[in-house]
Image (cartoon, rainbow, N blue to C red; front, top):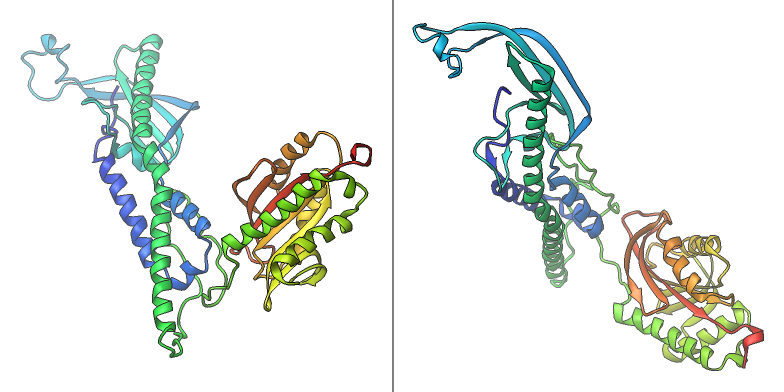
Length: 416
């Protein structure tokens, strides 16, 4: 088996990893400040992890092709023929048959020039053109079994080196996302500190008229470049949002009211959605001095529970009896339609009066996570609560928090 070059020789895997990390951090450091601040952090992390991750090639052996042609080779250096040509000077050309094998692959073709951390001193030979790996074998007395055996040996050696490469880069790819997040968050924090420093001077900040609103990533030749995620247009301005502790406090008040409902089922068994909502509003107003309202107009519709602080909303929720996955999807759509750009802390209260509450709890995440605006599953909140992040309907770069709280309310026949 012969080829034009040895594969898996060249730069070592550690140098490639170091170079990719340095290039990624350099792009983060050089990214336009407004573009970075206006783009969702999770989306940026995904972009950088995809852009600088390593795609180890995978062979598509089911689409191999072979060809043959007559070819001459110099056999003067063949030790098996030296006995016949001891006194011959110069090249000895012999006509034989050349077999060309082509194998399609996916992944980064440059990786065939990278030496994995584990390797041997006699790697396979071949050439790479586009997404085709080619090797040749030659002989003046070939037979099918001999050719098949050499092909199988060569394929085994290539597969082994690709596996070594996969082992070399697996942990690198896994760690790259965290390195990207660290770099993006570090730069964002520095930019925000700089803005706050200037703002504290009490002098208006000068805006450059030529400041770009978007950032175009340079083309990556080795693979299809991922698109930079969308950003909110205009100059970055931090929006006031409710503290996480306040959000959790409101959810805690709602959950405590649900415990009262469970302990005194007879007092609640004949209440409809509006009646149940009223009891939650009473508790919330005890904490927020009348700032919790029901059936309040907000943006494009009326929301069931709205908590305001001053001139802004800090919490919006919908209350629904469980009516199946389709009903929950409609409720999510309804809630998203109520939200203005500034609204970011939301909840859906699901009341179950059917049997099999466990089935309802199993159906909630299955329904929520297939919604087109779903972005991330944050964590479960106790046994009957679920927290997610969603994209805003009118701004894909804006994320909001959605908590689904499910309560098993008493049916009339079970009320004590």
